[in-house]
Length: 175
Image (cartoon, rainbow, N blue to C red; front, side, top):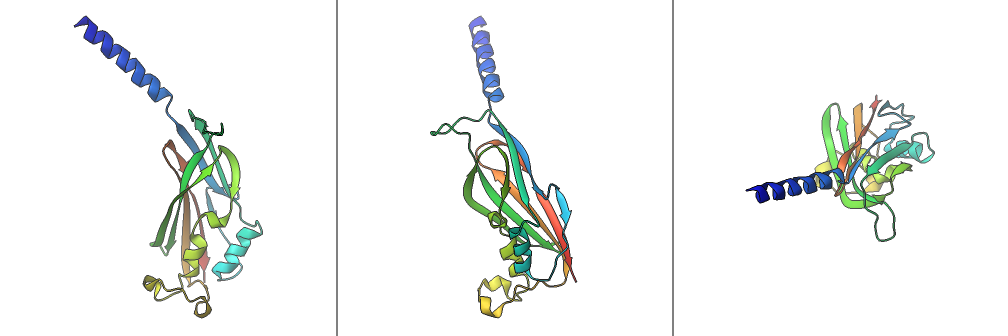
């Protein structure tokens, strides 16, 4: 009986030490250093919104810290992330897109391009009446946004590690 108790104690200490060494991250996405932003669009064009991101009027910041990560074969700390985009119009979800091809990132602070997410593509087709057909004919579609209140949430979802990256949300109104 005493030997069973000793084995149980050793096993508990081992499990606790593994838990303390668990790989964990925390961080967030920001747009111009804010978690929530209301944008002022220069036009109704999704392509013009993309231009605003390209000329750095809007910067997507990404930062995270990591604890207990193991180094990869090259001796670096790397975390893989899936990126998710949720676009809503007038409170209704238009599209939710998750990229299941993970991208590697190093802990720290960095900027992400708009292309890391799918909001420009989703917004470009919101004016289509036949979105469900998923037929892309760019010459016939202008990418002009319909009137309404839009909300975009961008998320980074870590793969194979515990923790969370806080999402960023931005919105705008098209009249």
